[in-house]
Each structure stands twice: as structure tokens, then as C-alpha cells.
Amino acid sequence: MPTVEVDPGHPLVHSIDPTASNSDSTTAQGTNTNEDAFQRRVHNDYLLRWLRPFENNPHTANPLLLRGGLTPTQKISTVVGVGGLWGFVIGAYLGGRKASLQYLAEHLHKLPRTREGWYFYHKHKNYRVMLNGIYSGSSYASKFVAICGAFTLTESLLDLWKGDTDASSTLTAAFVTASTFAYLNQLPAYSFRYAVRVGAITGLAIGLGQDVLHYYQGQPPFYFQWFKRTKSSDSTA
Image (cartoon, rainbow, N blue to C red; front, side, top):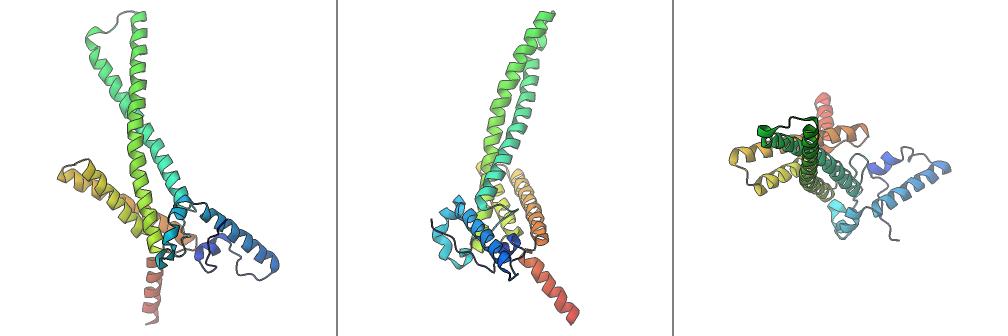
């Protein structure tokens, strides 16, 4: 099985093995085991295997980039799965409520007067609500899957191209996804700007949240390091 070369000095390797600097044999053996496991994990990542021809690019020579401890394929699968589930729940609720109100409006002039009539009224209404909820939930789920998949795929490709993970990739991916969604749905100018603005703000918030998490994991993004250098130089001066 071909292996992926791992840079021993990469911060992600040290984040997996915090005792990599020790020189005793037990620690060295544990380090090698962790690095081998990490190599297998990256080798089995479908997105990185698909992008393997681009590894000669200096920006992607070491594609060991994780967000939240997940490889690109794991992140895309997780976000798409959660997004599809939420989309189905939201769509089923909205579709079921609409079907319930529509059924009530259709039968408002001939409401039942007997217990048996009310039984069949609610029985037929529940069937209508259930079917419309499933249909609407599936429609919403497919849209959520497409949006979440486009967003996370664009973010992962930008991370691999830059060789780093930071909020700029998330912001750019959210902006591109929101713009594409608004264009494909032919939204009017005001709605187009609103969709892009909401997408950009959401992407920036998600990216900054991930950067804070990486900072506490010992992998600060470039602007954290730049701010520290600027602050230290100002204090020295």
C-alpha cells in the first residue's frame, strides 16, 4: 500500500503526539505508532486521494489539514449528513403544517357532525400531513445537502490549495456558495444581497470559531501569530 509522507515538523503531527520531543525509546515508539496511524488515516481519505496528483504543488505538498479533528472527507460527510437531517426535519414540519391548514380550508364548509365523521376527518388529514411532510422534507433535505456539500467542498479545496486552515477559506466558501444559490434561484436584487450578506456573516462566524478552537489546540492561524509579533515588537520598541 502506498504511503503518504508526513512532515515530522508539521504542527498537526505534534498535536496528535504531544510527547514527540522526548528521546526515550518508549516515547519514540509511541510517536512512530501515532504517525503511522495518522498516515493511514490520511491515505484513506477519499478527497486527499483524489487530489494526490496535486501534491507536487508546494501549497499542497503536505495535505495534513484537519478541521475539528476531521479530515476533509470526514468533515464533508458529517456536515452533509447533519445538514440533510436538519433539512428534512424543517421541511417536514413546514410541509405538514401547510398541508394541515390546507386540508382545514378545503373542508371548512363541510365539517363532520358525528364522532365517526371526526374520526375519518382526522384520519384523512393525518395521511395528507404525513405524505406532504415526507415530500417537503425530502425536497428541503436535498437542498440542504447540496448547499452544505458545496460549502464544505469549497472550503476544503481552499484549505488544500493554501496549505493552511483559517477563517478566510470559510468566509470565501460561504460567499461563493451564497452567491451561487442566489443566482440559481434568480432572486431579486434585494434578496440577492441579503442572501450573500447572511452567508458571508455566517461563514465568518464559523471560520472564527474554528480558528479559536485551533488556537487552543496549539495551532494558531496566521493572523494570531502576526498579531503576537506586532504586539511584541511594539512592546520592545
